[in-house]
Amino acid sequence: MAPGPSPGFDPSFGLVDATRRMIRLCGRLSDGHAHDTAIAQTPADTIWRDGKITLSRYRPLVDTPRLGPVLAFQGLIGRQTMLDLEPGRSLVRRLLAAGVDLYALDWGSPTRADRCRDMADCAVDTLADALDAMLYASGAARGVLFGVCQGGTFAACHAALEPERVKGLALAVAPIDFHADRASATPGQLNHWLRRIPDGLIERLIAQDGNVSGTLTAHALNALAPGRWATRYTADLAEIAEDPAALQTFLRMERWLADRPDQPGALARTWLVELYRENRLVEGRFLLDGRRVDLGAIACPVLNVYARDDHIVPPPCSTALSQHLRNVAYRAVEVPTGHIGVFVSKRAQPIVAPAMVAWLQHVG
Image (cartoon, rainbow, N blue to C red; front, top):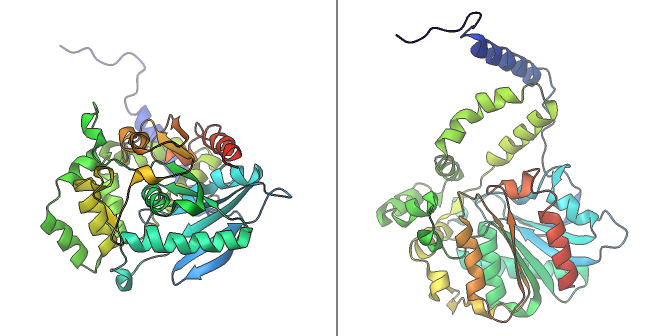
């Protein structure tokens, strides 16, 4: 016979306590305590526009910025606003405070009219135009590309195809070898799924409105960690009910997560088939505008920031870049976080910005 509860034990205590915290949380959400959840608030000025796409220059935090110029951008899977989530968790502000001349490229929100925009349009043409605008504004002859996630893949391709104007290439949580996780003890679940997605399904997804929905992308990424997602709005949220600062950070994260642009159909087709499934980039078979992308043609110093616990872009898929470079300075920086934690985790704050600043000082 199983022993009963010890004297004085109330099995409902945990539930009652959690319920009370959730009630207090609802009160905070309703009385205005958590309404100031704006993100990406560091002042910047738009200096170039191409339809929905904009390039902004951050206003300096020092008298004379001496490092850069640096062009920062995500791909179209998320927004670069993650780099400036809130003042205490802002890579943007830390770089500005160190004297970096920093610019941000925003891809806008693609619609059906953009369904034919392909990876060459993004990684070659748009980056070339944005780089031109940055160099004109800064008066520099060459600049640094800082690509995040899918944007890092764009940046690596651009640096390989147009090496003469890129003096430094910085990547963060960027996939390069989309099959490198196969040799890992923990292969990437996302990679596993996308390597096996049928051609017909990809075409059906694109055919809905010409693009792949950002909402669908969000659901797919959430499904990679269902346990974590299941507790996000229950136990995790109850835990921060008494901490207004943590609650605001949580809500700012939610704002960023909800703002996922659609992937233009042509770009999605290349990304899912030619890269995730066929791994053409590291096999030397990837073409943009009819030109083969040779990662060995990158001619500038490279900084590669990756997340040790990344379940979206497994570390081997990022660090494999070093195997394809020739005669350039390469530095890898491991951050003990997950994919998004590289930019917003407390553990990442004393690692990423100092590493980038030290590297930029070397690049010049």
